[in-house]
Image (cartoon, rainbow, N blue to C red; front, top):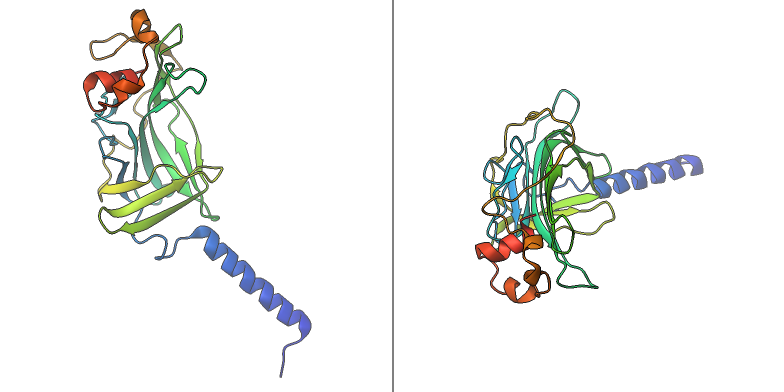
Length: 246
C-alpha cells in the first residue's frame, strides 16, 4: 500500500534535511580522516605554536625563519560546553599595490577555547587579555608597534585530507569561504602554552627597538628601496626582520 501524499512529502523533507545537515557538518571520515587534535603548520613548518613563538607576559616574539601560520587544538569537552582549547600563531606580510615598498609585516598570537558548530563551522573564542600582535609598517610614522590583540574568529568550514607525501592536511576556510594556507600535522600532541589565562592586563601599546628588530623608520634610505630583491633571499635574518618584525 502506497503512503499518503502528506506522509510521503514529510518523509522526503526529513530525508533532505538530514542529508543537508550531514553535508554541512562534513564530520565524516571522507572529509576528516583523522582528529583535529594536534599541531598544524603551513608551508615549510617554521611557524609553530607553543613556547618558541610568543611570550605574552613580556610582549615578545621569537621570529621564525619564514612566514606561515600554525594552529593547535585539544579535543575535550570543557565546562562551558566548548569542544577544546586552541592556540594560533601567524607570521605574515601584506603588500601595498600602490606602493610596493610599503610592505606591512604582522606577527600575532592568541589562545583560548573553540566550538564546533552544528553547521560545520568553527568559532575561536580567545582569552582577551593574552593575545599579542606586532605590526611593522615600513612607511608609517611609528613603524614598530606591539599591542594587545583579541579577535574572535569564525571558520566557515574545515576539512582534513590525507596528503600522499606530507600526511594529514588541514584546510580551514574563512568566514567568507576563502581558504587559508593549507596546514600539515606536525604533531598529534598539541604544542601549546598553558591552556589558561596567562596575563591580567588592560589594553596597552608599546614601541619596541630591541637588538633583533629592524626599525625601518630609522633608516630613510631603506624606505625608498624595493623589498622584492630582499625577498629573493628569504630565510636570512635581515630579510625576515624587514618583512615581519613589526
